[in-house]
Amino acid sequence: MRIAVAGLQHETNTFLPSVTTLADFERGSIYGPLRRGPEVLSFLETGNPVPMTGFLQACQSYRWTALPALWCFGEPGALVAADAFHRLAEDIISRFEAMRPFDAIYLDLHGALVVEGQDDGEGALLARLRDHFGEGMPIAASLDLHGNVTEQMVAAASFLVAYRTYPHIDMRETGARAAAGLRLLTEKGPMEKFHRKLPFLVPIHRQTTLTSPMRELYGMLAHTESREGALESLSFLPGFPLSDIAECGPSILAYGYDTDVVLSAGMAMVDAISAQESAFLVDLPDADEAVRRAIAWSGQRPALIADVQDNAGGGGTSDTMWLVRALLAQDAQDVAVGMVFDAEAAKAAASAGVGATITVALGGKLFSGDRPVESEFEVKAVSTGPFRLSGPMAGGAMADLGTMAVLRHGGVEIIVVSDRTQCHDLEFFRRVGIEPAQRAILVVKSTNHYRAAFQPIAGTIIEAGCPGACVMDPTTVPYNALRPGVRLGRGKTS
Ligand SMILES: [Zn+2]
Image (cartoon, rainbow, N blue to C red; front, side, top):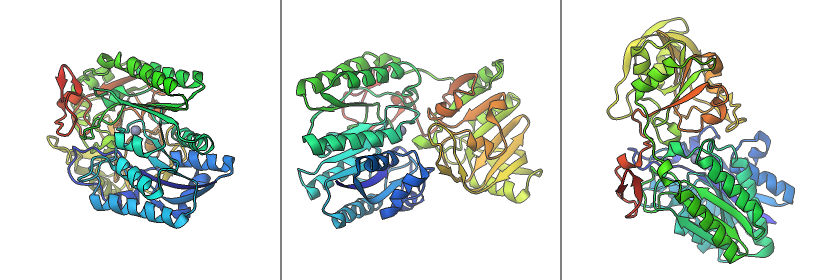
């Protein structure tokens, strides 16, 4: 078998200003830059934990030939520029065209890609591939757990399968599941499909699969899938609530060869998730209260404050200063903050050198309503260049945040970086000489992905609700395009 493969991942927060450009996709993320043609096969050597790696490994074990077109992963952010999407889609289709003949197509997608003037990026790409390569072509795609699945995606793809962990530690496995789905499609023909969207939104910080109720819901999903012989795949995607499109929100997908079994498994998940609706919306403490709780913590291991709404992985600017201000105001001690995106401050620290004292206006520049912290800081550390991550989620991937520095004021040390990314790996601290397990208080700008590496070293976790672009509470999001009647919580609907 010859399989045409490509990857195009972006999680689009449509409420951010600006656009995501082709250059953003070219530069990529911690999973590396855009790769074209045979460069995609390098995932087999590097072990990068993305779905494409799992798919390519499965190709080897099935003795299939993978024909790679391109792969890219843009850091989550604003609307994708129309020309960027058009050029990437054209590149995939023309490269696929040149590879003919082949037996099937695999795509490594996210599911929440929104383009200027086009709400359903993945649906549009899948529909074009379907049109171009015909009804009989098996097309499988893997999706992020934050995908907002659309009718167009389900209709155009033969098989869709999503991550089932958040933090996403099963990306590779999901690529392998897509390969298993393709194998069935080529051996036994098309499957029955089930797709249902739920009429409410799930705040992102309540989507973690490490706590209730998601832990139990995904347990049920795995149990149902393994119990039913005629059910080949069951997925639940809580979705990405910051994509303002009609079909935003949670979806359930089921595939198999028995209509009744597929329907009843899908509906059982719909009922179980719906029963938890009221458990999904919870209030979060503000910065002052979160810091008070962290200082009051007297356990052996660190108190960890998660700045859940300033998560670069959900489009956050990663430079808001509410928690830093509260930490300084309350004279918190033995604190490490990861990470504030401020290339100018990092550059100033690097040119002054370790041991110097500098005066900078740190962070607070990118999010409306915030302001920098203007103060003297001691430069505690400076580093530059790529380094390898080690955590359960991105272990093996190389990170390069440009010039990094540690700025200290009082008992607060702040890691300052020149490129924006979510703090979900201990190496972001270790790179600049901080052992996070040995601090009294840690701050991470992350919604949930931090849990994979930091939950084992933290004594307590405090989710702070200070303002940020990655808004948790759907009742405060100014939706325009959401379909009518979607429940946002607190009795509000779209
Ligand atoms: Zn995700």
